Length: 128
Image (cartoon, rainbow, N blue to C red; front, side, top):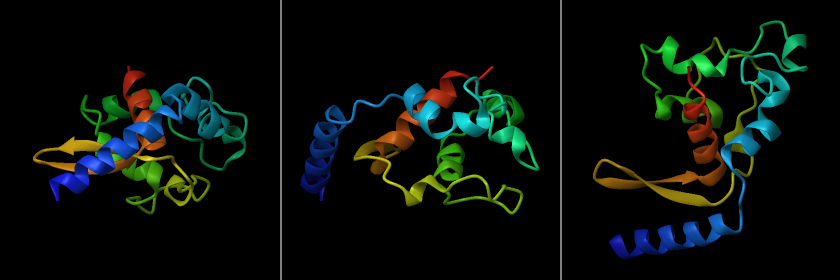
C-alpha cells in the first residue's frame, strides 16, 4: 500500500511540473468573473446574479478567524454544498482540475487535484 502511495505521489509531482498554474492564475481564470479580481464579489458576471457572490477575502473572518481548508475545497469541488448555494456556482469537481497531489491528512495521504489545492492556498493567502 505504501509503495502504491509513493508511486502516486511521484506521478503527481511530475505531473505538477507540467502544470505550472498557480493559485492566483487559477482564481483569475475560474473565479474572477463572479467574485472579481479582488475576490470581493465584484465580478462583472457576479453583479448580474440575483444574489451577489460572497467576499472570499472574509471566509476566515466569517468562520471565527479559522480558514477551513476542507470546507472551502468541498464548496469549490461541489462535494458539500447546502441549499443556500447559488446554482450559478459551478461544481469544479466536474471539470479537469489537474493531476492529483498527495496531501498529508493526519496519518494518511489524500489525493487532491492540483488546481483545487493551489486555488485553496491562494484563497487562504488573501484572507483579511
